[in-house]
Length: 167
Image 1 (cartoon, rainbow, N blue to C red):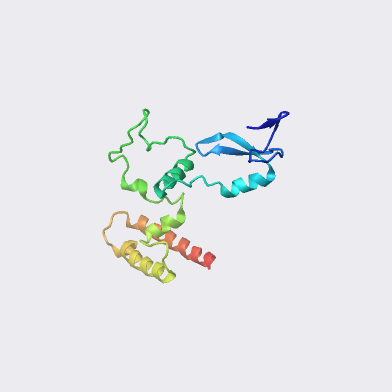
Image 2 (image 1 turned 90 degrees about the horizontal axis):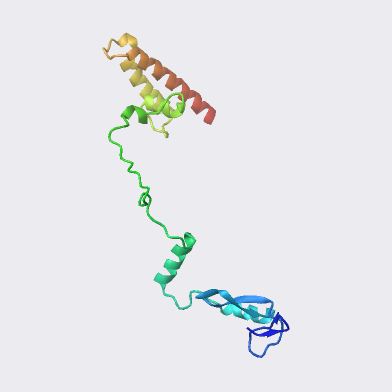
């Protein structure tokens, strides 16, 4: 580096202006700088290309390294403190069903065997079919049919009110 009375001088050939702007010496020495004046730093920045001598695969590798700030990464669970998260029938089907208290919309749709995209006509049709099956006067012999019927009525009422609010 050229120095004149503790001031940096522009590193460009035949330039004696003050070097106020730093630039890396080489792409492998990014923390070692050379100093340029304003005119020559503009020229340097126009010609600087970090990826100049790289092929496409090397550029892709650089992009991937930069996405993790060049820190080493490992797949989840591959460290020394790995805990084996295996479940053997610890969850039954009832835990995956919607709870009436947590999400009434999903619970209501499950009661009437509907999807979230169901129309009012489909809600009415499914309610009529299920109400005929589980009605207490139908004497269907299904255990807890009166409780199921109450749930159907509650789900139907909720869904109809929900459709009125949405539209």
